[in-house]
Every structure is written in structure tokens, then in C-alpha cells.
Image (cartoon, rainbow, N blue to C red; front, side, top):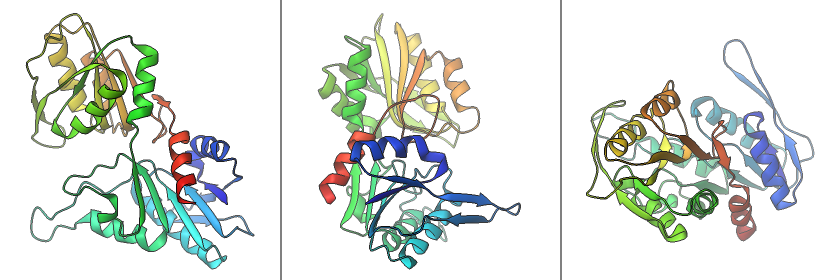
Length: 291
């Protein structure tokens, strides 16, 4: 077994290799001026390789994964496991208008054809309950970072209130509340566009209490900023945010901090300065269970 690491996800891949006691080698990657990628794999690959790369900013990465997997097969690799802690193109699971691409099915089928196993963390699934409904292979494995987040929060707080910013966050908030013993509340959110949201808090006494907003991803940051403003207006002592997937597009991080968040913590599913909750032990255990 060998871990193949792409340069943009090398620190996380090294931690995973250490947790597994497995060797690691890098994929050599070069981009030509016109945007095409040149990819070179190590020679003499073993029969089983693990490709470790998160799929934020996915369009180039998906092409490079295609090149990587096809080249590995040509070298005689029999089993390829993809570890992609952030999994792209999961939100579009139906055609909302005639002619729209249902990208979840298309990308899911592509991954199923390339890989024998796909392991990810808290994918953004709406209308399906199992990852193999999107990626039709037996070992399409969806893990949750809630235990790691819960342990992290227990190191920083004796008590806090957890806030889920919308109904989709209930599953993660409840799991973390069980792990920590903290109180929790769920807000109601209506998204009106890519950067416009309206929100209201449920009845709850936030006065003079530290509050931690829990969300699976932050892209524009508008949801977190809106929730922070409402919490501070409701008398919250301090507001923090824990994010599983820190996408942080454009001015998102600055927008969140300007709203009054004291600190942002996130997992290392995506490389970011806030990524301090490591997922290597969670991922390593999942790999050991499928071997």
C-alpha cells in the first residue's frame, strides 16, 4: 500500500501516512501556460494505492484525478482508494430547471469508474441518505468529523451553547452536543441567493454565554455573519465558529470576522489558516476497516 499525495494536500497526506504506517510519495504536477496539466507518477507502484486530495476548487483537480487514476491503472495498480475529505459537486442532485446538469450523478459516476473506494467527510447531501447513491460503488464511505470537533471544543470550553444556523446543520449539532454535553439551538434560515440570506433565532437564552456556531461548510460566509449579528444582539458573551469544510470564497473570512466572530476553527479537510482539527486518525481508521 502506498499513499500518493498531491502538492496542495501534502501536510494532511503526511499525517495520514504516519497514522497508517504507510509510505508516501508525491505526484509531480506541472501546469502549462495554457492551463493544461502534466502529471507524473512514481514508477513501480504497488497493487494498492491511496490517492489523497481534497476536492475544493474542483475543476482542474478532477481532470488531474482522471489522469492520475488512468495512469496508475496502466502501471498495473489493481486497487485505487480516493481519500477526498471534501467532496465536490454534491449539492446539485436534481434538475431545478429543464436542461440543468445533475452534477452529483455525473461526477459520482465518474468517480465510481475511476476508484474502487471513495472516502470523504460530511458530504453535502440533500435528498439522499447514503453516499453510494451518488457514487455507485460498495465502498463509498461518508465519515463524520463530529467526534473530532467535540473533543476539540471540550479542550477549549467547560460549557458553551452550540448553534446550528439552519435545519441542515441539525445532524452535526446534535452529535456534537451529545459528545460535549453542551446545550444547543437551531436557527431558521432562508437563502435568497448566493450571498443573500435571512435568518431568525429560535427562542433561547443566549445572554452572557459563549456560543459556537457549527456548520459543515463556509463558502461566502454570509450565513455565519448573519448568525453572529443575531447572537450578539441577543446578548451572547462571545461568538465562535467551527467549520468542517473551510471553503472561504473571496472575502468570506474577512466578512465573518467583521461581523464579530472571535475565532474560526476548522478541520483540515481543506488547507486553510483556520484548519486546526486534524482528520488523519478518522481517515486512517476508515482505511484500515476496508482493507
